[in-house]
Image (tube, rainbow over all chains, first blue to last red; front, side, top):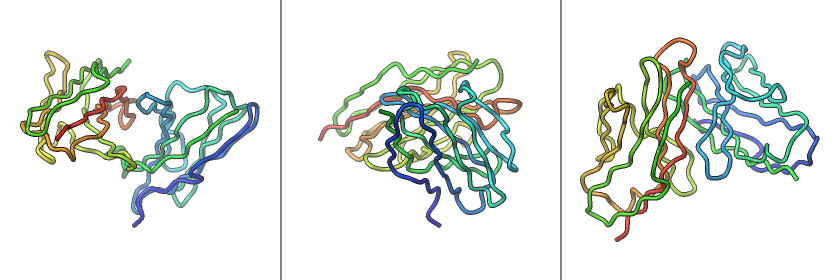
Length: 111
Length: 112
């Protein structure tokens, strides 16, 4: 089991564009959470998906949306990118809301 | 609102010295507290959680509800303990269950 995987590793986008990040959970996990980690900061909770539904959401605008597929993998979409969206985006998977296992992250740079 | 504060951004100790990484939290309810660690070029991983009351790699942490603290301690630091440490909180139930709130992290450097 490769654990939680994320793609792509790095991404460069221009302001105003849209981006999709992908996450495959650890085998046997049914819950996926997304976090944004700005440089020098701790991760900030964006939202959590369970049974293909958004179960919880942090203080992020509607430009941030997500999806969970029947195989439990997940996507994070960000529309109308701003310079401030530049960050490391972390995906974490868990069985229910128990111990979360983190992926390596996707580094997004908005220019 | 839930909040986690790690007052020290950087902490340096010598090998064999005791180390304590501070964590204070704010939460109106029963929290679950965690310590996560990120070694150089590795992903974030769970070090320990308060409900397990375990010792991992010689580290322990006690939840002090009166002082709303969850400090991480190790009596004898090793060079391989050098890493970024994050304290995190989740509600034990209800709407905050499974939503981790992280502190800003403390970079621990253990000198030989």
